[in-house]
Length: 239
Length: 239
DNA sequence: GGAACTAATAGTCTCTACGACTATAAAGAG
DNA sequence: CTCTTTATAGTCGTAGAGACTATTAGTTCC
Image 1 (cartoon, each protein chain N blue to C red):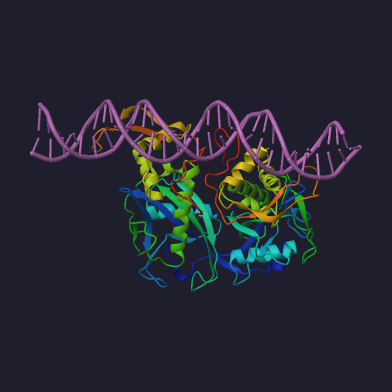
Image 2: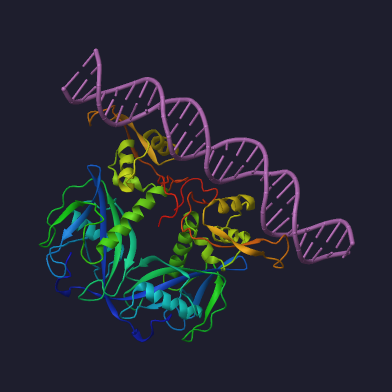
């Protein structure tokens, strides 16, 4: 099977699907679009689309991300391939192989209506929300993957604006994992990890809300956490 | 872009590529095939092939795995999607999107010549070995992924036969990571992790080689390691 | 203006678990 | 029998995580 002998292959449609996650008001939100046509007309779906003839999946994903979020500069955002979904009956009309991506954003403005009729909106992440095609599964996989990556990478800063407080960073962990963390311990751990975050020279946030103003930090140069920051209380066998 | 409007899509060829890894004589080996035709005729490549019309990538990968290894029962082997490679110039003849998989085997017999002219062989893993297409990159990604997964999953047993000694299990880690581990500490860690391995009731391996005979273990029911078994000495920032 | 509240930050104590060891046991090779 | 090799047992010191308490510096409410 190593030669593509005599062009003996079946043509497939190839798409990208995006699980775009963000934090709004301490809740995990997902970018969803409402389908305007059959199948699954009127249902929510992950944004996505076909690869252009000379595009890689990564390029197509970033293009879709820009189109769907309406953000002018999407180049710094975290975008990562999740996995590929290739079941033969994913789409009732034809054979579609879809490369799924996960994108993480700091809180973003409401997307505009997109190019076509269907609307795009930020909706709270809810594993029970029915989605078109196998997008429920893709979204669940994305959530699981991101949750796992928080443990041993510095990914959490991708949810934060350029300057953030340690409380905001902790909110990322608590929201994605759905658990409460001890504030002093979290702080100690983050500051003990070299180059995870670095303090912003002057300034301490003032009138943001109640309580003592917090110091501001920027994302550091580290990409991995050694040792990792493990989720609490997972006795036994997770996925 | 959420509707597949008017079938406005480009057809692609979709293939699977397999990075099949095993341990032979305490060395990491890869299953490679020699290409019989252009392009890259005579060069080594990862085994793989086209998806059949109603196959998922996973199904195709397991079929290819059975064909290329010549093993009769391939159902219990560890097979996992790695990622998808979709650069527009991967194959000089046409647009090919390839879903790559990683497979882990206990030491396996030399594969037979396969269905077509090209030969298939186990060769020592060597990141510097030139491969056809972008297979060098795929293989490097597979190695990196497997190395990382050893840290927080029970994947290492996938390289071992049904019954194995702790020394063999330690060899998996040392070979894949390319580092030496302390034997008593490794043993303590593995046995302290619930359900990572379980002792085989009777029996202790006898005349295998020199030294005191080792007890035999089987893979347990656990799939994840909490806390993880981290690679030593990675100060700073790995991938 | 003070009291109550809220969140950030500092610091303590304990215990687990890992790294670095030393020691012993059980086989084969010579 | 001795040497070598590998498996297994156990010890000691320390980094780091969990569970706390305490203090500080702002808001909000009366």
